[in-house]
Length: 353
Image 1 (tube, rainbow, N blue to C red):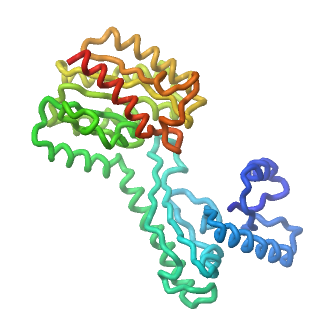
Image 2 (tube, helix red, strand yellow; image 1 turned 30 degrees about the vertical axis):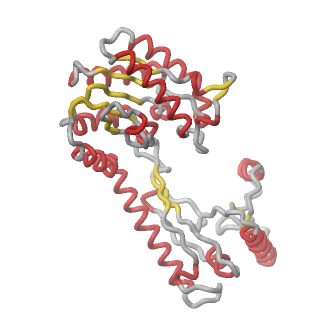
Image 3 (cartoon, rainbow, N blue to C red; image 1 turned 180 degrees about the vertical axis):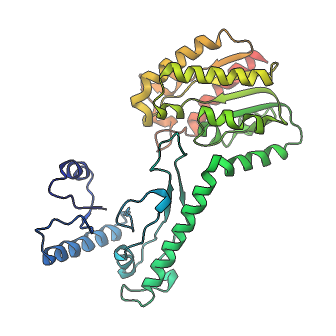
């Protein structure tokens, strides 16, 4: 669902017309020549289209604020229209609240995050019709829930505090902190839930955290590795730094600098650096990704106890990215993708250990 474009918003109109959005008039974006009768007629048509979509099991995505807000000002006051629609249907639809923070910032300034809150129906608030006396109070409660959600998610985003706390707890729970196979990097590692099962011969510890840049991994390295004595460290980093506009050489230099730091603390530990994977989400960066992997491979050949795990080509089929190995987001690996990565790491471990 999206607002109608103003007469001079040609790009806005052309963009949204491609996707089959249901249009509705929004305050402050109504052409001056439009009469109240025409607006009322259009809005009535909107309700009919939206209701028909819901009754045909088609999901609707909407912003109850009717406008965009910076994270610090979010959420704005909710308009009641969509909640009236949800209340008017005989079979009330589920409303699924999604809280977003930091999408108004550069990725170098703060991590982008969203959280899905528990779904509900309007009748959960006692609202069974759009004329209910409880509607206004219900909308305000929903709005307040969003405010709390934004505040909590924003606070958690400060320096990855929430994720780091969980990782430190995982470290404390290890019976032995010696001779470990430790995974350290961004969400490609964090989302690898079956590390222990995939490497049964090893005592594993997964210290990946989502959205991590190279500098993020640098910031938390000492804190997370203070009491850990790894035999092998598996790294995955550099992919998120593509969003910062860095050159391939800059990213390679940052990775090598980080590896130098790891080696300074663990001179006898073997380091496996995983090449940056291709992905549908970053197809426009594939040339740079291949350049980074090539440069890094050459650099790593000159380093002692450091080895490159290159599985880029294994994720391709007929020189194209194989969708089997990726989730629907087009960025992260599927279960099949992790098995390709597991095999590549296993082969390297068998050769080294």
